[in-house]
Image (cartoon, rainbow, N blue to C red; front, side):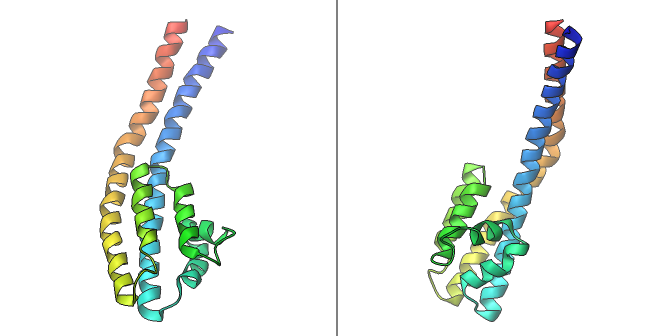
Length: 160
């Protein structure tokens, strides 16, 4: 019975580490998705001058932000608010969320040139965030799994 308990403690430590590593990868994927959304909006606004609601609706297949926003009940009335709510649900890190909300607040607030400048600004801000998220995932993923495993082993030894 003690051996089974020890195995369960060890497995829970490893699962904790895997969960933390997965969260790092998820943050990287979301920031990459945001960067791609910025590019999609730059292209759509710059070349076709499509309304934001149409651009978000068309991007729902590729972008989790667009998919979440398009599924919001108030999307047709206020696509900017729907995009903001999508970011609140998806982005877990407060700094990422605040930056995203600042990005969404500036959408549709000016003409085409102003919108393109706004998108360029946020593309320049998201790039370093994405780079840091990649570095964090590469450095910390193995660390979290190892910490979970070693923590589980230490607890197993203390229990036995």
